[in-house]
Image (tube, rainbow, N blue to C red):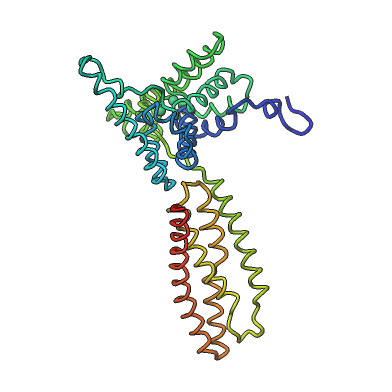
Length: 373
Ligand SMILES: [Zn+2]
Ligand SMILES: [Zn+2]
């Protein structure tokens, strides 16, 4: 039913996971696998940046001895993609230490019960990434079981590709309440399976020399890989949380540009042939500030997700300017002020480098003093 504003009932009654499901249905492969992986990826990304210093999160992660195999490999991919090596090192040092102490404690009991598995080697809880991923999987399957209420979801299922793998069909059948919902899920799986099998049969038929001249389509040639994934689930993909990082670069950049503009207003040269003080000051203070901030962000503060892109790339990237320095130098040369141009370039490069080193030294000094206090 369409309302005056052109929005359908479906648009107004959007259950949890609705838009994510639409997005995942547009990707090839099992939408539930993709949804669960995206949720787990977000969980691990958050854990590596904000969670590693939280005692509650660390406690929960210890109880499961880190993650299951699938999510441990995902954590490695997250850390490599998002430079979360520090978060992983903090997290896994903690995990190794606790397994060591559990193992030490169980060693005294093990003499008495030699045949048993050492209790310290058994995780006490399920992988936290699995737990968060499953919540997404359940909301997707609940939606897929009632697609007759959501025409946009239903039409996304008509592209002739598989949308739910067998393991997720099984969890869906165990999860939904009514026989009608189970029938909807079975119907969805069967339709995709029959389409896929028809492609496999075509591929097999065209391998016969009598029909080889018909030529196979790309879909037919790759159907066997989809068939494998349909029965076991889709492999891990990589998900990135780019928008928020882009926003932090944007905000930092806007602040940096404003700061440069203010310095420009305060120190505007009296004549075009004068020494470009404003740009000089901006580049030297920028190098000093970036040196200081880089030490704080990479060596002293706990891992943060957006601060580096906000301060390092955004603010100081916009605040300092190499291009203006180059143009101003050339303009001075054009005006015959060769000595001023060369002094300007050499001073900027030499003092800028020194300011960067001094900024880093300040950052290290300041925090060593604090730690001792
Ligand atoms: Zn799946
Ligand atoms: Zn897991």
